[in-house]
Image 1: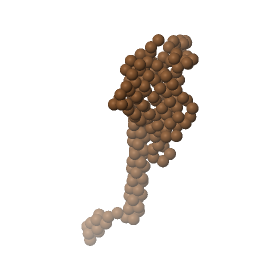
Image 2 (image 1 turned 45 degrees about the horizontal axis):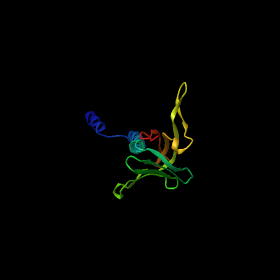
Image 3 (image 1 turned 90 degrees about the vertical axis):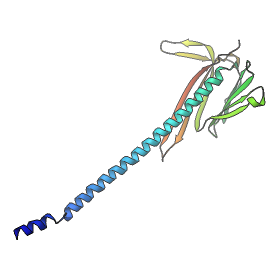
Image 4 (image 1 turned 30 degrees about the vertical axis):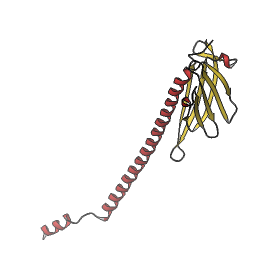
Length: 193
């Protein structure tokens, strides 16, 4: 009889207390896994957005560097909001290049007008651009003990260096957003003087 009793206790299963403890531990584990997965998704979204903004900013920098370095002169500009723009010319190749920013649409656009209609093109360089600024500077730098700076040009004809900066933002999940700030200095290589 004693052997029969030991066998029934061994095959009895879990008690109610053991089942409640196991269920509680399982619920805690599932909650932790869901929280970590949610955190990983947000981290991935933020990282992807930063990479996207950085790539677009880098492409704009490359395009502007290629186009503006070939310019011979700045011929006009306007800094009145909501529409800022400046136009440079390349007298050697015979084209005009206008870079503009519309504060309402938050788009930076590049327009190239060449000697023939086939040379004309317009393209959107940046979207979600919250800020875009430019300054025209003279040729000679001012060298200080810890930095090199350029003096603003007194007229468009004196411009040898264009300093530009912009800020682009991209909204993510909920209140999260990514931001990319770029600044560049482009010397007009083909400046005619």
